[in-house]
Every structure is written in structure tokens, then in C-alpha cells.
Image 1 (cartoon, one colour):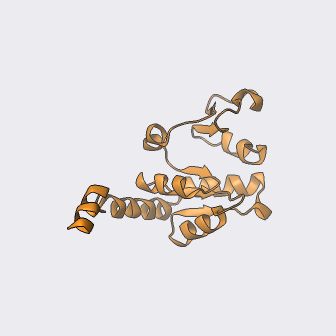
Image 2 (cartoon, rainbow, N blue to C red):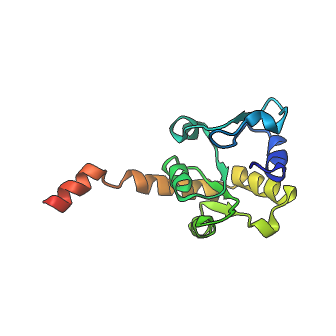
Length: 148
């Protein structure tokens, strides 16, 4: 569930905010939102990420990599499973800010989101990783080399 601790401080920022509540979940349950907040159950990364300045997620590995493929810094709010390790790894790489559950307040989320949007080093690091990813061989090239 998208917690109000996360939604409220983001909706007041001077940016558009897309909130996904999960497939099959009703976005209307979150009630009316300001004009800059868009609610949906799901949004495909391929359509959304090219239009983003950064991401705020729980820190699943696929989402972090998808963000980096687009040169986007990340605010990770880990909740369980591998999200803590993923977030810590991304933070060490200089492409993410992590707010652990014990520190999760509206104030810490707002401060971290503002830093995410304003810190040129986070964005530069994410773009450097994007360049590295773009330089990697595609699956066909790897298979050809392995089979060769």
C-alpha cells in the first residue's frame, strides 16, 4: 500500500508525481489528489521512465536497474526481502538515497526527494552507469561469443 507518509510530502513538490498502487488495486481508494499527482494501478517502465527525473520505490532490483538504464537517480524506501541490500548497493554506487523504515517520516521523505531532484552528483552518477550499461553487449552478442 502507498503510505501517506510517502505520498503527502511528494505531492507538494513542484513536480509531477505518478503513484502506482499495484495491479488490481484501486487507485481511487487514495482519494482526491492535487493536479500534479497521477494515480494508477500500474505503469510500464518503458513508457514512464523516459519522462522521469528520478524514482521513489521500495528498491526492487528490476526497478533500480530500469531506472539506471534511463540514467535516473533513485530514492529507495526498502520494506523487505532484497530491497535493503539493493538500496545499500545503489547508495554505495552514488546513484540512490535510502531511507530505512525506522527513519521513514514525511520530513525525511521530503528532504530525500528534494535532494534526489537537486543533487547533480546523484544524476551524474546515474548517467555514468547508464553509459556503462549502454556499452554492454546485447544478449545475442554474448551468446555468439559463448558459443564461438
